[in-house]
Image: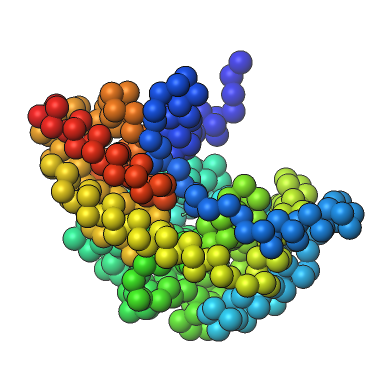
Length: 393
Ligand code: PLP
């Protein structure tokens, strides 16, 4: 049967594909070390689970308003004020089925056919597909490794055309873990204001930071920038709640209203029980976050040490999120594999180590690995990668 044109060119998420392959091998009895996953290895904290259970027992199991329950939107407004000194009315906030669906809905409501969205590369795998599904055109601009993979204001300026509608800023970034400074954001923001471009600021990793630098939301840098920006965030990474599927967007009323209308015909509402769980996440203590960040930071240092000793591998040290994005170009040349995909596939088949080829992130010289697994498993994975490269050299 012929499917719709819009899904003909849709590629499945590279991250999910490798995770699924690793899972299948594991189920078949292989000793697989999965470095592909994009989620904390912590369980959702008890106080959040208790809140969800309480909500269910109280009968809070029915439909909610399409844009989310008012107390949760109030809690998100309070969080934006607390963390970024940003004021949002509750009708400037929509709660969504994960940050992913906030982004999906946003592109649906801001893009017309042929509108361009500037996507700094390397990028999170879903941005281009979501833009294309909204009939937009992703325009990739390479963030140079020498500039920590970040987009500069000059690069942004020269990529703008009369069709440019939006730019994505993802800080800290998946896959690179790099963060934009206040000065860099101000310079990018100036260009966006000059050309009246919407800034899509994906801040899902804002709480997972491993240097003493603070996360800055571009929306917080001026009133005009707040108007120009749609902030995307959620509880998935900050509260170890990936499966609960709660995200949100904050922005202009017109955009949020359109997103809410669309949600009312697609999801009806984000899962009611999860909304009450997220309400607890934003209104009760954050002690588990500190514990999680300390643990991730330790594992980052540990893995970074090991990975930079691998033959033919270099790596810029990430500042946030939970990924390393090493450059393996020389290792690929040394081992004679055709490309990074072939390299990663052989590594999984021969050494049972699953990592994600950079191709899906727009970076064919790199691989992405998540280091939030047990340290002894990390050490074993690095030993196997080392062995793999040396065997093929
Ligand atoms: N944005 C980025 C950069 C991500 O890495 C992810 C998840 O991997 C998301 C958004 C989506 O998060 P959620 O689980 O809330 O849909």
